[in-house]
Length: 103
Image (tube, rainbow, N blue to C red; front, side, top):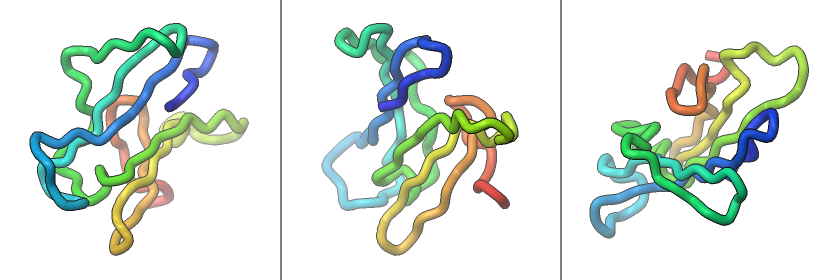
């Protein structure tokens, strides 16, 4: 779960699968739900933020880097994958993967 900057609420990111499958399969997606108070949650209609990116969608987590001096394009960060593959990802916005960090 991510606490949004400026007290704007919370966002929970989770792995979605259409059916029970092994780790890191192509059908995995990362989606999110939002909350203003951390108790009541809604899933926006178009809530998938990462698809066709296996195995990074497996065990994926995201956070907002509040340190000063971090470029805006690297404030939203995430990491995910399996034991065989892990790379950090950076986001220009919370809903769109921009690049592999530092790449």
